[in-house]
Length: 348
Image 1 (tube, rainbow, N blue to C red):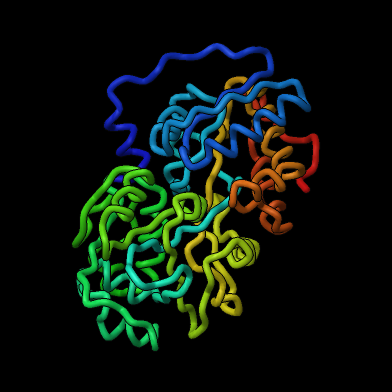
Image 2: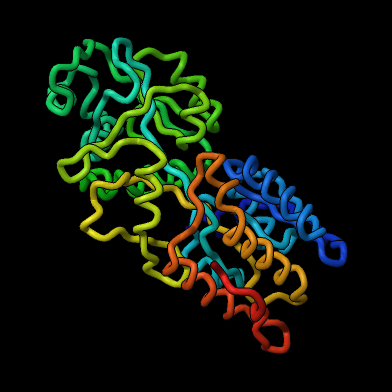
């Protein structure tokens, strides 16, 4: 069963309809997005005199609330398939992005000095590589004095967009991982200890010498954790904002739902684990005011919000190709009379 159907099936009580101010709008979802959304909505209200409230309830609950039309939009770090979108009459598009990075606690290794690869990371999470001085790690890190110390694998036990993005990467890097475990926001991991939330990962990695896990880059840097670089196509992809931005700008949407974005083969040395935050809005609203206002807000974010987005170590949508695709999707939203809702304003 798909993620959306699982979430809706497990829901025992949906909130009843809500009352809007004339033009005020409400959103909910991704906890990762809350700090930047708090600032963006504050700026938008000051400039437009329109209130945009946003509740940090997590991607899964945000999808539930959007499907029930409790909110006007939701943000999710887990993309929905076209089937899931069609079943709930929703439209999906990217708002900003971040990067997922491997974090570890290893004595004697300075920050930014450890290299891993996708295959090696998959083997660690598969339980095939269990010691920090394993030959495979030493070969990628010649001259480094790696201790004979057990690798303690830590993963997210809750529904997590970070897990979804990481397992997408592992599935591309390892045939064995793809065959036996695949992609998921919550799954049965082969080895390791499960913890809840980004805060749980931070605490566990700091407490466990020899541990390894994964976090969104902003959370990892705020927590002052050591981050591993990744060897991609024989080159070292450095975990920094410049590398992430180059990778995000190079991505191209494969489907109208933006469920999958691909990178040109010439750019394979860019950071390979990009996490995209998506917005969900109603595709066939019973009333169009709130949808119009939601699109106007996101259009303002694309036009004016980039400096704020970057200040939170996130990546704004700047690709003209992606913005053009977003505008094209917005024009498919119809009011009850069959008229296109989005006809004013142009995406930057």
